[in-house]
Image (cartoon, rainbow, N blue to C red; front, top):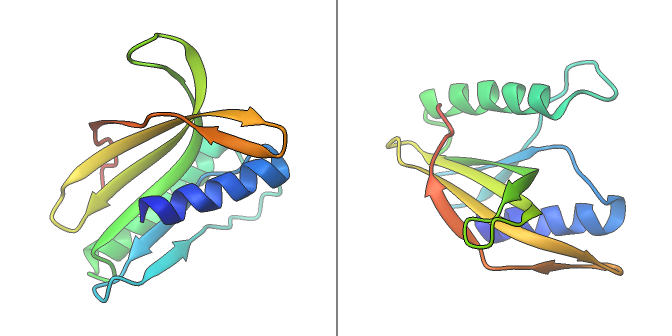
Length: 128
């Protein structure tokens, strides 16, 4: 799931230099399903997109459609070691047992590429 989200986010960053948050879910057979939302706004805020993704994923977990879900966002972090402000991919993960994890993958934009830096994990904040 993490590699799927990372590859997709990198593709968006290379092509568009940014992206709206997006989600994925894993079925019991371990196939990955992209999850998106639409609510009649051409340029919604990232916060609204996340809110709608969380609602859709919460309902799907409750109905046992998926065994795990995640939302990927482009965020600005203070690196925990260097305290440097930098861009990062944030992957917020939760499974159907309630286990949660946030993964942060700092990155630097290069000419036509993205350089991924050392990732780190924090306590999960996805509350589905």
